[in-house]
Image (cartoon, rainbow, N blue to C red):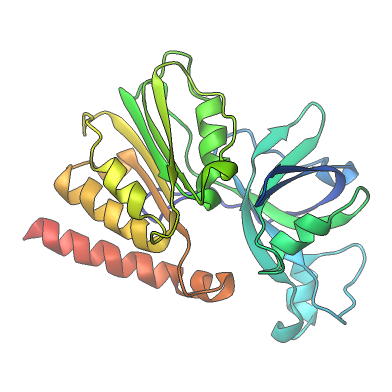
Length: 284
């Protein structure tokens, strides 16, 4: 996903994917690969942070076939609209018509995670999209990427699409060593796994990013994950480092104490308030 500071191309078309296979990547990360004719008009080749809106039907509600989200919004009361959850496209293979999505799973917590944990070949899921707004630039002098588990799929897609001579630093915060994944990183890019343990989400990331040396005029930055640490790093990168907006992709994927519905409802106001506060500080 992309922050308000970077324009994003949004896609509203509804597609469907049929589960082809699943894989347990780590104790809390499940990969689901979708295929089928419902992906015939889907494409996600422009950005490395492409995201889709997964559509989960409300229990006890029967929707029209073929499924049409526009029709649902027009004909059904709001409380019967499906629930949506936002997920990053980990990989899109247009030739094979396969869409890969990685899910963080914490037992029965949430909606999408338990669905992914129980998914089996043949299951069908509808989704809208893709949107997106970031891709590593070959012209950047260096790259700085930082995020937690929620940003890991986008970070992994980004480093896999960097030129072979790319330079930079990548920081990924996970619970512990069991949640690390094998990533294909260019030789000049330093990948550091940070283990959160009992510390607050993002604390280790903020400390790590503050140690990085880079040229503020030519670095390209991607910081996504829990909204609190993204806010802290936005302030550091914009005000302390003097990195301009067009060099930054910043977004709070989630926020401590809020479920996704509550966070998405307040996210725009949160971003606008933080930006106004920091613009005021910069002007002063």
